Image 1 (cartoon, rainbow, N blue to C red):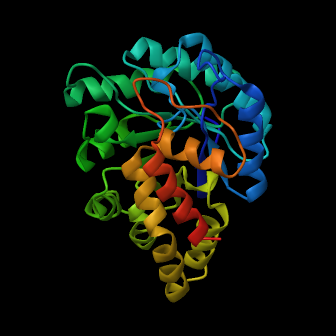
Image 2 (cartoon, rainbow, N blue to C red):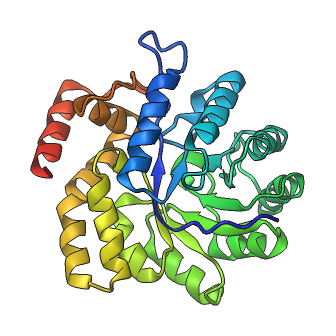
Image 3 (cartoon, rainbow, N blue to C red):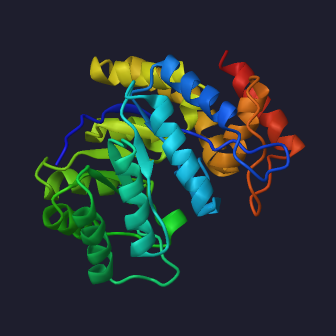
Length: 295
């Protein structure tokens, strides 16, 4: 199995759509990726919640995956979200991402039916056996409808060789503490909940998976550097400065808020795909005020 060091600020990418919303705007996608990498993020994560991966056709998903990996061009590691409703479809996506050069694939156990623990384990095992790159296990009940206990996560981590890292997005800091304790410090974990960034780093998170670098990369990176330097006072100041925007991004919905924010800073990425609405006038005004306050 290949290995890769995933750490620091992991930037989610958006999937820009054309003005009619019927196709992917690859030029805008390339500009958004370059913007993130040039800002200094430590990894790129396409096709997750921010990237509207669940709302793309298979052809569009393949197009965005292949383009993103090729455009990143190993400047930083690429973590491709391959989650899908069935195991077979997730396996197909994982193989596709690996074949085109993804460094890591991220898997959320998405399903229409509520899955048993045995079914979730089998899902990860099937994907793991189909590829040779590391898997980031992703726990986010808000989007998957499935909340994996720490005990189940550790069971999967121990049973599937290339499940080597965990992204925890429940917003419950105790999950991270428990991962550290029950995992005996062997399980690299990453924060996926913006308002929990400071606590997560204090709990031992190796990185922060976030859409925020699309709008405020330097503040995100400065927070990580302050954590590495054990400068708690500076880390607190940096975190509380950006917290109002982090809260707004989360509550307003990632595709809507990030696409609106990119439009405000001069990068047109189209609107989110229905059923998700674009950010309304009031929301855009609030977002502009938050961005102005951070300049």
